[in-house]
Length: 231
Image (cartoon, rainbow, N blue to C red; front, side, top):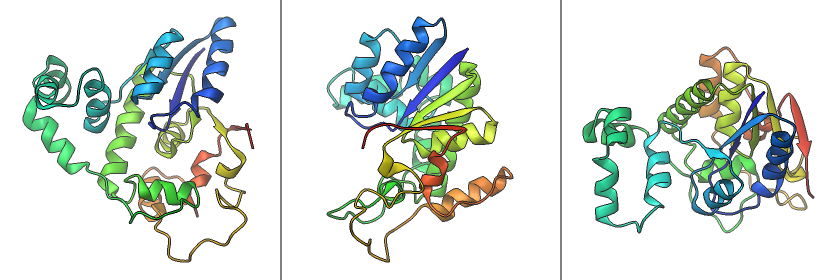
């Protein structure tokens, strides 16, 4: 079987401490596994472990993935936007910039505390329907092109939504405070009543594909099998 491991593209190793050992064990048992995480530090660890790291056809992923191979300066940006890969995937510079402009994220106001996955999603660009829609389409295409039989996700709500739309078996790896039945990251206090949420955006996309609405982003993280690892 082919397993595709998706994770939130954060430049830390917290999520990989859960997913990489599982991928390694699956590999020992004769299965194929690949990852999707363009962030610098996870990308290095994934490569060292001998796994392929796939990049969705989305401008934000290309900027994150390709620019980390060199210093983020103008020459590096020029090499990216005039590369053969960008011409092939986006039809050249104008297509790349047009899609980047249309898919720009919209974020909630920064706060001193992050209360939940739902709040985190609002702070990382998911208040923009165009951004979420374009990322979902790119991840659906990646799942299809990779011929994955199962998606294994760690804290990437849009990847979970893409798997659900494609009706791919979904396994999720969560901390207890990421589970939809939890009270969030700051479970010992009541959250403010006016926290931003991407739920209206997510529900609009879910409805387009005939899927049931959700009450909070965490519901997307509940898979066909959900493993709660860690405190």
